Image 1 (tube, one colour):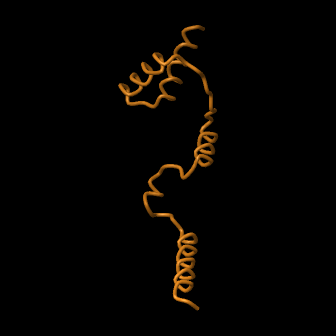
Image 2 (cartoon, one colour):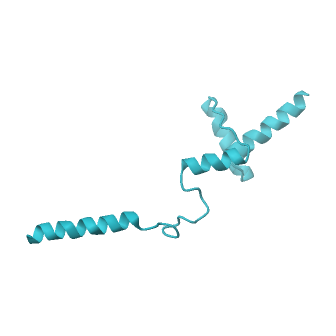
Image 3 (cartoon, helix red, strand yellow):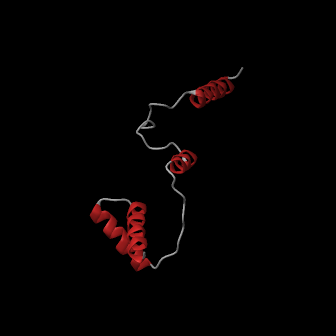
Length: 91
């Protein structure tokens, strides 16, 4: 076997070993954040959360983001809180 072919085979072995190597515990994989979108969707579903997309004016979104940052809350939590208050006030 030629030296270049031998080097290529060795490189392929290394790449294959890297693909098989478990990544748990490496590079912050166990930092508590979901590994992917599917896992995040499953967690949201278990918590009873439903995705709800709306289109709002940019000025309103900017003020909501500023208020959320001021309250140290997520945008979703802030919007849910404001909607709950509005619904209670309407009753």
